[in-house]
Length: 607
Image 1 (cartoon, rainbow, N blue to C red):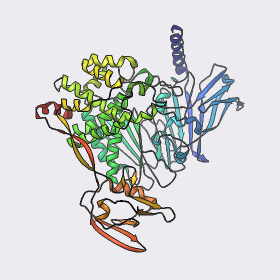
Image 2 (cartoon, rainbow, N blue to C red; image 1 turned 45 degrees about the vertical axis):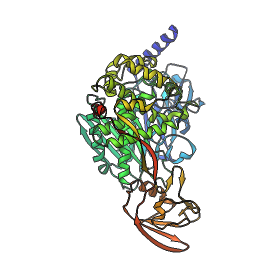
Image 3 (cartoon, one colour; image 1 turned 60 degrees about the vertical axis):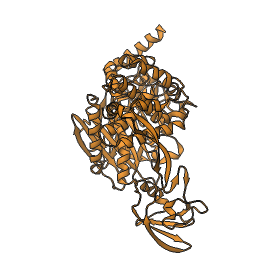
Image 4 (cartoon, rainbow, N blue to C red; image 1 turned 135 degrees about the vertical axis):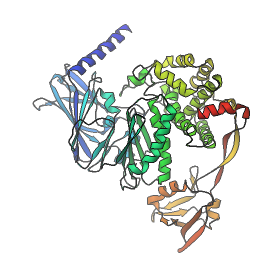
């Protein structure tokens, strides 16, 4: 064990020595695209070993999935200073060993993107890459640039040459004044990976919230959305988040890179976002109605923004010293993702962006979703083993039960402190105790939390987070005077769960109301029947090409709003008019019912 520690220390200091003498220089050429690939050239510092390994990440922080980005690298070659080829051996999907490494002067390779071949892999789109010649390049750097063994702490200099018509949106500072070349300098490989760049026709806004500069950059294939059109809602949201966070102030610049995808073509299909310390990459469908896009961005971007609390300011050694090709995962996804998701909902009720009933409905939805997962699986065990089955199948529970864990901890602290403190206070204290450059040991976190809060918090964590006991949510809601109630929620007029009321004729691409099923009132009130071909709704024509637009658009419909539907029945076109009658489904939610707990409840929800 002592020898292992000594080896690690020596490796660390050797990295620092290399960092003081040289850096890794990387060039990406976006002007030359061949077979939908771009070339990357890497100039390493002086290598003193007989051979060296160059690696592209297998996994990156925030994804919790092994994506093997090296699979998108082709024809990696190594050369000496005279241009002579050196022997390269590909060891696995993500690593190459270069012989005679003391002579190594340059590595070159071609990189394919992930967006237009998403049917061949499982890379989550916001963590993927795009190469669309002359229009858009989404550079999640882990998909383009790798690292040398024992040189992770060496500074990197990145040079990107690009068409003058494209501008690179990033939180990094470009030190080159040219409009065809950008030069960025970062302290180490991890900093480069955490700074994506999106090249597109310039479409961005900037605004300040206190002393933080926010940039919003948008790529919209048809131009239907612009940065200016979506910025007001995002600005209100970030202002509310900053007000909610109070003294937290982890970064001076934050970038939102929004890629709107053409779902009709070969393009990104994974909607959501990936967080970075000073940026987030977001992928959404361009055909989404503006009001729905605004709602989705509010929830998705707010979640990613709250990651400046954890894991940026508070994280374990597994994250701080992240191994991109042989990762050891932390036990505490309940905090990194769960508490983050809880904050993304709590701040909205705290700052008046949603109502109390809407907040309870969201939490009720998370309880329902969590109940469909394995509720007796230890959350810490799942987290530490999230890359492997059966634990990886439970990962999505970090956004459901993980958020509910955060809620219960919040309620316990509020109750024990008489409403004076909550989980945000705990996170602030943890950030002081640790901070971005002082990671904790996984096994020590629970003890530190108890030290900063109450024994009851530790009992909860041991029983319901490390343990295998399902959480009795009604007991925790009761502490703040909230009880369960039955309700009905509006469903989608075209789908009930996974069962549709419509189908598509593959030969004509027409949308058809399913025959021989019981149709809800939405159809019967308008006089629609099974077998009717649905041609238009409120003047907009629909078929297979934009059926997603129709389904998503219906999410904004209101009960009793006027509607006009054009159908074809047995060869005859009919226009049906009436009022929207949404299907309603039984559900469970929560309501404030105990006035004696009102003061504590308001402290919980309003801070």
